Length: 257
Image: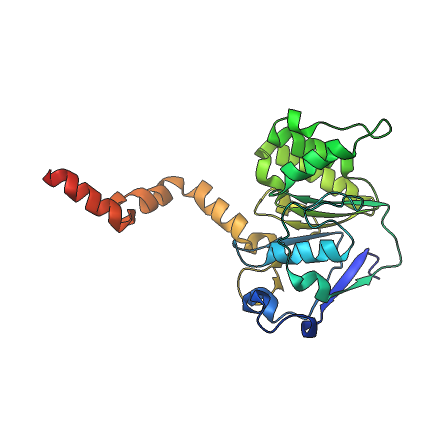
């Protein structure tokens, strides 16, 4: 039995404009339903493949502010979310989440600023701006991640060293084992290693499940680590071949002057 907070989603395409850019995103355009049987679901794929668009839409449909924060955050510095959130129907489980958070790497500065403005004597600010980017990311995660919570994380590894990513992995696994549910967009082969996670690939054709070893993040990292010298020689060996045409012309002019 699927006991997750969000068990599945259904997209009502009649609520999306026929001219919407969503219809040009290959991974989303042919999608009607997605099921989430695991407490941890990863969205993977190349940049621009639609994974963050989907994460954002599910988070907003679940009641979170488009720029991030808890469900109590209500602010907007730039309205950029798509119309997909209004076309999603969520199939919810019988349990209710006790807390939650929407963490976006791109708007973390704005959320950290609002956290200071929302602070009071009963809820003092964590003063994230006074920490390094990586320290503030991890501090927020360690404060907000709780049992029986619903969490949306968009590239949480962006500010974290590999060692800190391992720390975050342990926090995610701990909460998942305590009945929390996570939706995570990531390129990190470290975070993707969480046991039992569902991995959905947005990168090649329609959204489809894949194994850890099938992800680009794992394959590219494995290839680079095991064949670093050969790859660098292949990528960087012929510098002239990879220079843009304007640089070739600039070099010729300098040689003739």
